[in-house]
Every structure is written in structure tokens, then in C-alpha cells.
Length: 230
Ligand code: DX5
Ligand code: ZN
Image (cartoon, rainbow, N blue to C red):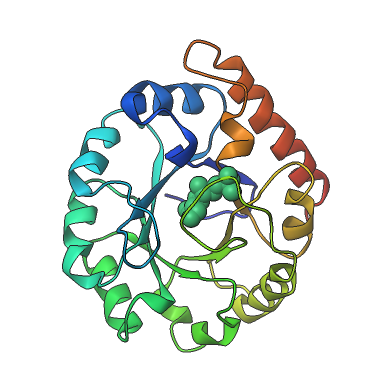
């Protein structure tokens, strides 16, 4: 994975047909997705459950590009190796998921993967200060994690601005997750984001039998984001 700050659209398969992940992943990539965002939830760190490493490994075979795995699980360290072996390219853990964030990030990079840190809406940007040299991506949650289809929390735009300033010229992506639409994407891109997760805004109205709708939805978010690029 080469680093650049071009806009990346990362559809979240949390909004896909869970009985048809393979075809859904192929469809969104064919329709212009840059990364495929995979939400792992444990029913403990967040009040919802999705799936684990075996499902990630099965999905991997249907993704040609970047598999972006967002772990909403606690404890997390025990499972990092399994998700790396399942084929994640980027593995993101939550800063709130345990007391040893630095160790979690070392484990991810030790497996040869890109390491990400996600921050819940109430978590300040300064938790990143002493791990900046261990990360490849910051994932700013613009909803409280657990479910798709929630409303964008506008207070997070200022956090994105702060993180962009902290990062300076380090090769670290700023990814945004939650409530991203063509209306909200420009707000976070103008503040410094380069990667946008979108679940409901990509999958709404489409299906594997009508994948061109995914393409239109992705293109609308991309156009709005690119017009706001800093
Ligand atoms: C929420 C997940 C998101 C979610 C986004 O906990 O991390 O990736 O699927 O869904 P939308 O885009 O519908 O807010
Ligand atoms: Zn996510």
C-alpha cells in the first residue's frame, strides 16, 4: 500500500447483505470503492455483534484491493494476530479498548500490517500524542460505534482539524467513520480527512443485482469530498 492523500471511499459492509458478503465486496469494488471497510463488533466494547477472523478470511478472497478492518472489541491484543492472518491490510484498534495501546500497535506492525487507532466521539485527540510514530491511520468516529445509519456528530470536525495539525507531514491517513453522506463529507475533508467510511450512504437503494446504484452513491460522496479538498 503506497501512501497518498487522495480521497479514498471505504464502503462499510455493515450495511451489506450479510448472507452475500463475497458478491457485495466484488460489487462495491467494481463500482469504485477504494477500500473495503470491515466492522468487527464483540457485544462488549460495543452493543452489537458482527463476526470474527474466520469471516474476515472468507471475505478476503473476494477483495482485490485494501481490506480495512475496524476492531470494536475489548480485549483486543489476544486477537490481533488472528485478524492479521485473516488478511487485513489495515488493522485499527480503539484507543479506549484497553490500557496498552502502544503494545497493540506494536503487535499490528509486528505482523507487517498498517496500524490504525480509532477514537470514540468523547475521546480527545491528545491520546495520540505519544503513539504518532507507531501509526499509519487515525479513524475518527463521527457516531458512537455499534450501528450503521446514525447521525453525524458535528463536534468531531474540530477534532479532525486538531489531528491534522498534530500529524504534520507524517504519512498517516485520517479516516472518518459514521454518518458520512455527500452533505457531511465536505466538512471532514476540509478539516483534513482523506479516507471516508460510508455504510448506509453507499448501500442504500442498491443490491448485487442493481450494483450501479452503489456506483452512483460512491461517486456522489467522492465528488462532494473532492470539491472540499484542502
Ligand atoms: C459503526 C461502524 C461504521 C458504520 C458506518 O460502528 O464502525 O463503519 O457501518 O455506517 P454509516 O455510514 O451508516 O453511519
Ligand atoms: Zn467502522
